[in-house]
Image (cartoon, rainbow, N blue to C red; front, side, top):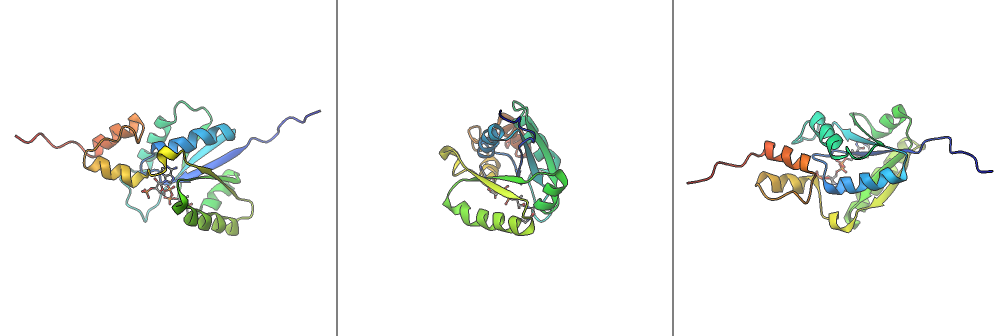
Length: 171
Ligand code: COA
């Protein structure tokens, strides 16, 4: 007889998410089908100068994933492996957009494995339509009031409009 599955399959999807893009949401939606629970962990990286505060980035992630029931949005400011130990999670999910991501991701996965042999990294390839997308591209387009509706959720689009209000029409 088949044994019931005792342990929930939980994974962490870490990143800066400044802001979350449709590329991230593609990975989140697909990973949420593979794992019982996905913790989206937002890095509070003090060395970067983010456009959105940690709280704003977390709130935008919550709003953009409100249709998913097995997502938790959390923040961390530690080594990822320490955060995972504290949360008792052993799986990291990362998205691979293109070959150019591979070297950095391999380095990061190997470093995390060196720091903790309990941690495994699972890579998911991006859906091709998002393979060019990054948060900085979105920020750049929004800064010059270009269209971002196909790149981010409506909530993020609205938040970007607030950060970069349109200049009054020139006469
Ligand atoms: N779709 C769209 N964009 C994506 C993406 C996807 N699927 N995957 C990555 N990106 C983009 C991000 O938007 C971001 O773009 P930007 O640089 O233009 O802003 C870029 O790729 C990298 O972002 P992200 O995935 O958020 O990674 P990161 O380098 O900011 O952070 C952490 C990676 C948080 C996982 C890593 O820095 C970390 O674990 N830090 C904690 C400290 C630590 O443990 N260090 C040792 C491990 S090496």
